[in-house]
Length: 617
Image 1 (cartoon, rainbow, N blue to C red):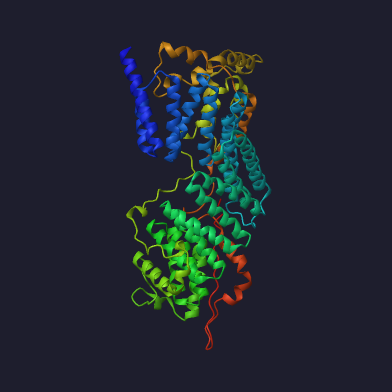
Image 2: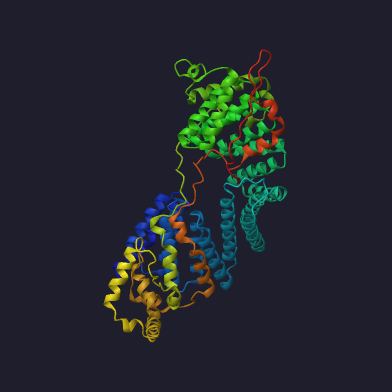
């Protein structure tokens, strides 16, 4: 008894320390303590369920989604075994969130719906609000993914995408009504923000602005600087599409200021990128170059080659607009070099066209631009970028007194080494982790005991002896072992049905061995809970039907992965400024085109827009 008490205390102490570390943001340290608690084990089922849930959440934040699924699945199994309906709902919601991040939206929707059903059944208003919010997130993420590659104008969406996003707004609106009823202001802020994001994707920019202003107000109320920064950025994005460029720059400058306060280099770079493109729309090319150089500097610091390429492309276009073809050629060549390196075929074609036009305008050839003889070729190092920033700012020194503090050159003030973050975590692919591939198959099999007839596998006769040789061999060997009279008997199927019926109550025991749950010590104290309560509240057929429906297309998903979204670019927002710039500048293309130099004048070349990079939220 003393040993057991010491073990219980040790497990609980380790778990509490893990929880403390996770709350402090140290998820790696927290998982180590939670894993240690699991190794010690406990007979307290509630404690073990809480550890599973915390471990799953910690691994989620560490982006180890396979392990997150594993522990949320353990939590779901244990909650169902002990008849904890609220716990089952929460575990289902956590599974849904993890599956959403993995891009498995249909499965995620089933789990979140399960969470919603249980919360409503139990009268759990807080859980119901969370489930509605999570359902909105699933459909928002699904709609946003469906938008990848779409070339329609903002708001001109395919019907399936529009339907998905409208379903997201429906869930967010229900969530907002409920959290207002609960008086949860923080949750209201999140709902307003996501409603703004979804209306933005739908092209309802006026509605989006209304919701983002509500989001901004609540963020200020709570002193949430990160949420305030997001609201300013989202407001700027929506105003761009309404043509209110000057107001958009004000919001982007506030985004930049808050990003620096938060020491978030990635968001700082994105704000510089947005400001550079907005000043291009305003035809203020000197300011545009300022911000594109700052974006380029941070992209180099963070080794974001895609971001570097976009910055070089933008700088080339800005210098073209100023008539500085030599500098434009340098950045066009850098853009071409980076596009080749990262395998960006469209970017490479665009850069090649720009380089050819500029070389023709300048009357130079490739041999004139060799590293040994070119006055244009530079290494593009950090020192050169800083020098260019300093030189460019010096030219504009006369108007610096009238600028706001956030517009001034950002390295004029002393820089704390803590402000510089060079390491960027690698992007997380949306592919499935081998450890979580069969998560839902196991969940299906656990509860399918009474529906075996519908799921039986019937062997088809081989239609091609060349490609079904293995199947034919297996069938022939079975035929030799079974008496043909038995297989043709009319009572055979009845016999199989009888066997299946008699075995149905034992299938759960065969498939889910509770004793295999890590960290569970089975004693006489909890044995009754494990055995006696597991059969309560069996899910309805609707739940099974939803699961089967969402699983029906998974075989094809496993055989052929969806196309990659392209190289990850942390310093470049999703917003498609390129097509917008093209539309806004459509009337000015002729005057910006590169013409062959004549004796009288030299015309600047036209920017060649790259393909859309998607919408931001």
